[in-house]
Length: 338
Image 1 (cartoon, one colour):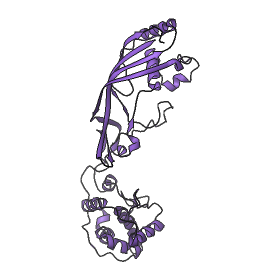
Image 2: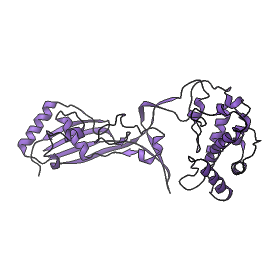
Image 3: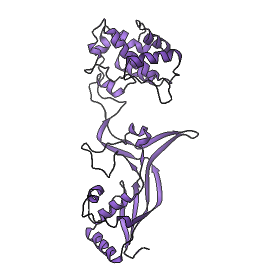
Image 4: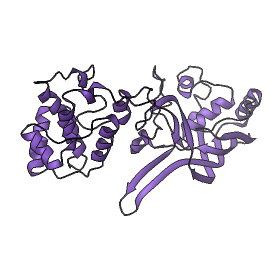
């Protein structure tokens, strides 16, 4: 028996973690198609037609709308005895890699945006400790290392308001990583011993300056607590809003100093950028495929006619093949396949 399926624009990428062959978690499968998630190569998932895809299609064609794993565990699973006799041949005719905008119904928040008016009169910027506290960000890298290894009064000045502080943090985040040697290593060791959450190095073993500056703010927070009331500089958990020992998040920092909520993101382009040595930056887009799928079932003709009748009775006109796209049965042959 042969079932020929024609399909168009079948999506060959997955936006959810987990596995279709497992029960859904209580909170559902996690969406991993956001711009932030796609920075991780593991989250750019390619999909091809597999035997599971084929079995899902066959169950759908005979009227079984359950998940494949649910059907397979039932004693009365229709294809239980003949699943090993089923093979397939996928014949892609057109393969397109195109920019596609996908919706995220969970409504995650934009990492680099905020809403509402900016509140410049927050105590973090108007208190007697403000100038010395934020002055840490005005130090150059050499001065910062001296401050961390031999804490002293910070006399450097920086304009203390939300936008200026955020702009400075963004500048520091762009600073190139430095070698973990000499005074930099001494600074690194001091912060490692001081803060258990401090990491401070990238995957090449280089020190990231932004981590030093952010941890230096926590060090300054502790030092200034000896002569000032620093309660207005802390969150309920005792940290600094939007700033960790290793970096910062713009949306979380600005959320304290704006009248609006965090900006919702309801979708984004599906694109993964990868740096390939010798080639440079490569952009990977969503893959859409059109073609035909031949499903071969090696069973007697009488049994093939029964399946053909079940398909006709179910009356499934069109369906998804994998993710999205349009698929339909174009021909069914009940002849025995050799």
